[in-house]
Length: 242
Length: 294
Ligand SMILES: Nc1ncnc2c1ncn2[C@@H]1O[C@H](COP(=O)(O)OP(=O)(O)OP(=O)(O)O)[C@@H](O)[C@H]1O
Ligand SMILES: [Mg+2]
Image (cartoon, rainbow over all chains, first blue to last red; front, side, top):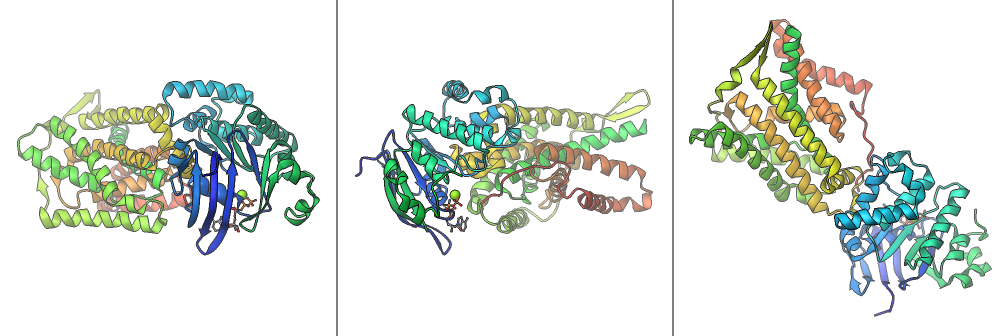
């Protein structure tokens, strides 16, 4: 077995007859920030969804922390220590900010939950004054921070993030990338899907490039970010952040 | 004066509808299924009452037994039937809930009897309380008080316990809740248990008044509960409660005002009013936002 915290091997997932990902393999070591980039429809969300248990693969293996978690339900995957910040955030809009964070800690004891809540408020000071505000009223940036905070509330061993900067104003995109750097510096393990290839390559250790359901390139972030070819061939044009 | 009596009467009726509608809305929330088998909990409760009362048990014990039996039956029905259609297309779930409705009915016809059986009603339900010119039925006051306490308890459960938060999270976005570590088995079974408890409380009062058990005993209360939940905007818990009280009030006020020769049309008129409501507010009284289930 590989030495990674997360090992994905030969993973295939379908939507009916559509083969959304094919023979995908990747590894994330503990403490690493790995990013997954690729054009729309490449299968990035499908891959994270399959790892997190939302989708069932037709073939292949997902091994996390030396346990085969292939086909586990999302709640079991979470309990194993793998938490997903889903695409479009999916925070509970009818809930208060506080309740959203509490749901994130549903698997913990009352004490642990309260402690982590305090920790999250230190990490996301903007949420402090908004604890009793309905989450549906948060701005995009606040909502994204809440989504990440909620995912961290389970005290996961590793975090999966699906396009955390999607739909945010440029200033808020900065906030999200700062946050990712902060999480990296605190030793977290992250697998991040991003459209913003150049920027995520600046903070990541390694990267995988997906296209049409397959991994077509991989390497260290610095290697890939210097590669003109990569941007021309796979990401359609320049690597300059939008 | 008469109006006050009618309002109390309507709220009494509405209380039962509200409890039934709330149970239906709780299940709709987590499963996106309209539970047409909800009335079967009343049917089962009715036979429980019949057997216990004719064996000489006191109504107080019977009331307790009804609530327990309704809650357990609700969980059993989920385990036997609805568990298999979780996440299925809406139509499949609809057919399943109809299926359970007719199956339970048929089982009672086949193994018990097709006829209605009478059981004694508690004598205090006919007592009234005179305040000046107003004549209030003790029964109505008891239903309203019990319902308010039950609703308050349910509210605290939903707002302040992790189970309540899990249930509301699953109702808003099942997948996101699942990703947070909420177990679908636990939250769905919990929803059916809660729904059964609420139906049990409603059944106690419904049966005290009807005093009979039959295979179709649950049909009328089920229809009223589903209607009230629809009025409230399916899936909205506060809407369901509101819808229940509104339905009860409208029924009583109509019955009191319609000329005797057309009182039989009350239900028809109520349906027309509901249809009108949906013309102007297709989403029901209260709008809820939730993410489509996959
Ligand atoms: N629910 C679904 N049903 C059918 N096909 C789907 C579904 N979701 C995704 N697909 C298809 O699967 C493929 C991969 O989609 P996926 O969402 O994983 O891509 P992505 O890389 O996340 O794209 P984006 O950058 O737009 O988020 C696409 O061809 C898409 O059309
Ligand atoms: Mg995607």
